Image 1 (cartoon, rainbow, N blue to C red):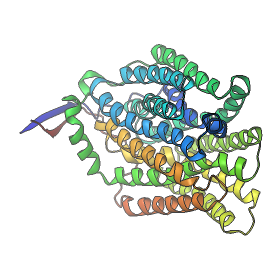
Image 2: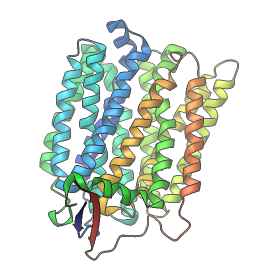
Image 3: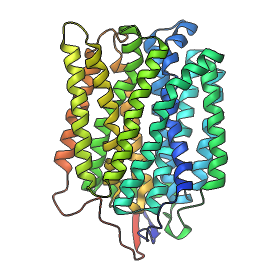
Image 4: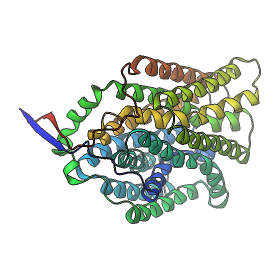
Length: 427
């Protein structure tokens, strides 16, 4: 038996982006990378306090990313059915609550569980925030909106290590998570005041979560979805391997102090911020596919530098630092355009499509985080292996699934109302 589920006016006209909602959802989206990066300088301290190995505390980072994957799988489809505003508010509230639980953790396993639940709350910014943009923008403005959101998210990596070190020096590593809880609570207030509902009732997917299989099937039939999705999954694996391993490589392997590490990480974050702003500007003139190719080229430069450092007889600090800078900076021109490519033909089920892309991306990140630090950062070989593999697969996805037709991210969706039918299995 099949239940016929209908969505109406899902290809309605884009209404345009305004600064206030973009800033509010961007702030929540920023808390996702901030919640992972902010306690990176504290990982060695956490391991010492709990009397456990570095790879075990690394699972707290993996827990945040896997939690973000799970949260996106839930919040994306739910937002297609009930609207965007309620999931955004619920996610920011959950993040505040479980960040506080992280601060009160009595042991490493409680910390890992609390990090997972904190990640679930943070996920709504990445998925539902982008779905808000897809409700309001189309064509090149969609690419620009996604890129600007990514640029706001880049503030997290810039501020997080410095903020983490300052909070840790003042109140210990637990103070870091209290800071995250306060930021999430303030974001809840901002969302409540600045973000109205962007998905009208008549454009919502009917049938609730029963429509999810049909929405996923719709995405799976789109070549542009696979082009953007596979590229961002693999490329992000390479970039996140750098994020996960950087504290161990620079502090444990090269002897950087926490302060020096924070400065290095902030410089790389500034590179990401500037590349995002440049990408937003280029999106008015270049296609998403062209910008995406530039992002992969920058990622490749970083990969070559890290691999060269790993193969050298002695570690070259400058090769490592320049490689890390390129791996971070590449995120600006590949993440936003890749996501715009993935959803350009799927505005009817944008929440579900973005959830699927984001969930797999963070599952991949959760897997590569411990792999990249095998050996505790004393060897670059595990990191280099992950980075090379991720970059190669990203190029493969972009080449294999790149549309050969005239479809592009610059084409706007139809402006007339339409009706879309989705069938999902029923009992």
